[in-house]
Length: 330
Image 1 (cartoon, rainbow, N blue to C red):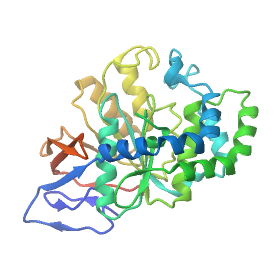
Image 2 (cartoon, rainbow, N blue to C red):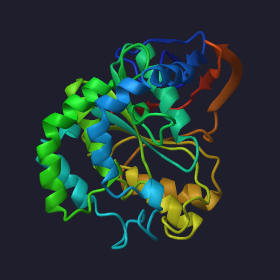
Image 3 (spheres, helix red, strand yellow):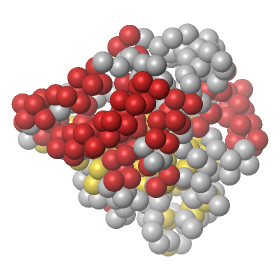
Image 4 (cartoon, rainbow, N blue to C red):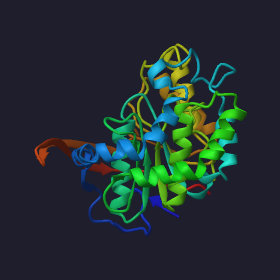
């Protein structure tokens, strides 16, 4: 059991053993998201990757890609117009439900999802966890979306990605046929990522929702596997796809909240938007911790740096948390 303890310093938000001291209520951690290293490594391996992943990339490119074509109206809402999560459920069942083999932190929000995923992944790795991370979109290579490792975040290798694809290709072919061609690029890539996390026996996966939350392909994580849901910010983006209003966007993103599982709120939100999120958490009996709660403070200081002639940024994060919160489901 892992708990954030009131007025005590916790070494890492998620720690294998509770390490605390009453003397210093602040926790500071210097994180390097290693973006420069990821970019340089992906650039140097581009030619080899193109050949290794040619079949896999062609397979994905033959599927519907809403990142390129645009998202249909109301597709991200929890309504009959929304994406059919049944497709994803059936696909994962045909693959043996690999997402049931690891704990996950699920992140939704309009802005800040990728940064939050990077911070959390590095905090967890600093505490010795084996972490898988799934984010979108990518900059140079699709491998950037899936990272694995215990010390430094490394994109999945082209060899590992291709090996898994070849192993499950027949199942994917059958699923595409069963769904009459409606399986999407993002759904298949999400299934591949979850398979890789299970194959790598990660302790925990940090997963960024693609669009909204309720009907996103990543939202097949059950309450028994959800360590925490995180909702960063709510603003007017993808309005048509998420119902046409700020309120409908909040409802869609609150769809990642699962019964009895902790919810971390970022914000700041408009009061009535925060009420939507808190009411959803209350209806699911989910404990809430918010950046706006009295006693919670945070400071993030960006430090410009250059590594191997490539600009990057270090972030010095200081958190002071005044509220108890269980970080695993019970």
